[in-house]
Amino acid sequence: MSRPAADLLAPGRPDASGRSGAAAPEGAEAAAVRRRAVLSCAVGNFVELFDFLIFGLFAAQIGQNFFPAGDPVVSLLSAFATYGVGFVMRPVGAVVIGAYGDRRGRKEALILTVGLMAGATALTGLIPSYDTLGVWAPLLLVACRLVQGFSTGGEWGGAAAFLVEYAPPGRRGFVGSLQQFSVGLALLAGTLTAAALNAALDPAQMTAWGWRVPFLLGVVLAPIGLYLRSRVAETPAFGRALSARQVSAAPLREALTTYRRPVLAAFGLSVVGTVGNYTFNIFLPSFAAGQLGIPAGTAYASSAAAAVILTALTPAAGALSDRVGRKAVLLVSAVGYVVLAYPLMRLVVDHPTGLGLAATQGLAAVLLALYAGPLCAVLSELFPTRVRATALSVGYSLAVTLFGGFAPFVATFLIRATGAPVSPALFVIAAALISTVTLLLIEDPTDAPLD
Image (cartoon, rainbow, N blue to C red; front, side, top):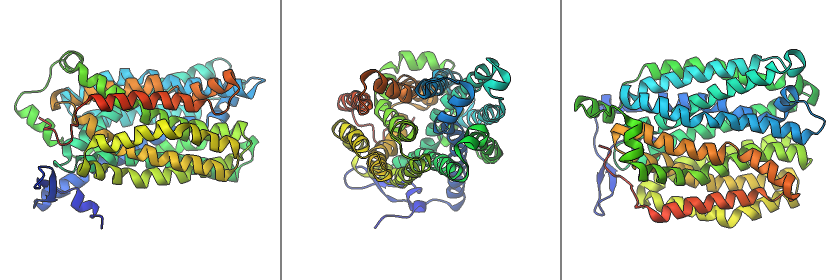
């Protein structure tokens, strides 16, 4: 029988095998502080990623408003290119905000990221279309997307470090997975919003104003994340580093010199998860609705069902990695993508129905959950506290930028260039091979000392 979440958040003690197992007693006040910290980080991360992901989910409508073209594929390519531009700023945000978090604290960095995201998201929902504003409309859209990317670049690594540093040994996989759990909730909320809007509005209304609704909704949620994050204490690990005067004066330089090999490992480990996510969860609904003839509402309902699977299984995968080690769980996922990516794309192309799409996205969600669950913990355990936020942010954000952010664009381009609707599977397989090789080359860092 699975243990309650409250028990999983309690500190562990080593069992006979040396791996942390049963929970040790903990003061009620300390447990309450941990719960508040984990909640504040997860809620803020949900707000941040909801705001960032909805752009891809409404790419078709955004393309028609800001990149009018006679060919709908060209319009969609332009929108996905703008979507990918946001990822170009993620390494910049990782460097600037990650270094800020390593010098000033995780809490301060996470408050900054939520504020930046809220402003950029609000402006995105308010920009007039190309017909009203001309060339300034796409330029303002790109500017907002760049700010969103900058914010998210600092958010991911900061949130991962924050959660893992609050987790007791033996529970880092589970607690770290709550960051990805909140990403799953954000994806679920975004896809449900898209499905509801497409069901309630006709295509003309969706193009005219319906796509703006989720952007404005994201702004309403932002103050909740800001409030919760402002009310928690700094992580114990960073507090110890600060007290011992072990805070790095130049975390980026130290990360890229002393810890350059773990940074490269973080990059390789992050590739397949981000490609799998943005191919099957962001690209596929728009492609299915626009090119396979599946109704938009059905496509987004399928994505919502996949998000439920992802959200439910991610904490379980994180907890499993606490028991059997990070590498074992990650390898099952990476090899699974190598073997199943092509059959999954073949399935939806050969059966262009709601059921075919749901089967493809549901199976892909299982693979992604197995990868997302242990990811925050394994990346955090590669680095010491003094450079953790910067180093893991840089490694992860570079992978997301080069492989994930442009995955929808690459997938659309591959189909256009080859004429084969299943060709995006080749990109997923290549990404999976990179992560598989990386996993085989590193030692399992499960429960490595944080300081």
